[in-house]
Length: 278
View 1 (cartoon, one colour):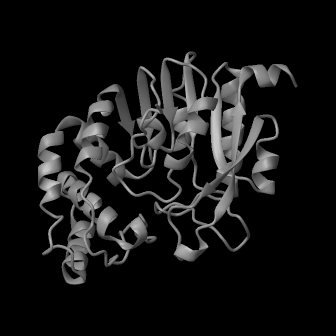
View 2 (cartoon, helix red, strand yellow):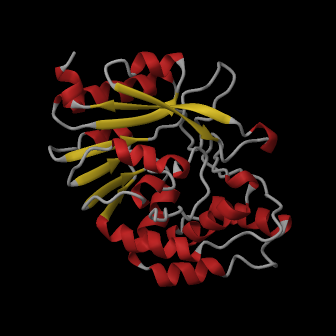
């Protein structure tokens, strides 16, 4: 009987739940998995390393993870209070969004971040250039409260350290015996199709190029790096030194449900053995 997969408690654009078996099968053994772009954490939740270093550039996301790790019962109880009929209205949603954007209370922002994730449009996480959260109300009949998934995450989080750093700094923390999995913002499928700015900073071609270079350097130090991305000419070029494999994935978040068609996904493994064969 196949082992049941663990679902992330957050909705996430580009989440890897549908690909975790393929990704996990390509990750080498190690004592620690490092994820510079952890997102919703599907790979973390469905792999079995002794230790994890999990990073994201979004401080609201990382603060939520750290609080869930430290005080799961309190956080789950307080967050659940916002999943009521009273709170499932546009008027309340926008009032809370204004409060969130004016608040510096990390605990309160974490609770609201989860609320927005389940009540906001398409589960998107998006900020404007001023760093203000600006996702509109989603109009769901009965948003799901992920209590079970949060408890699973909180338990496994005891093996993890969560950081909020630029991805370059996370690479500098890797040591022999580690493996790195990167799920960066996607390279665009075309010049006009791009979803790279869920944080206030965009992730353009220069960043994609820097990530590929860091992966190559890490593998030359004996640290394997696996990267997932769209299969497009840019990524084929950047990941040329790696062992490449292609698969199809259905997009879970899209502007139009009818357009959620399979897209080509590329997995690129930069490993010392691959470099030796060049």
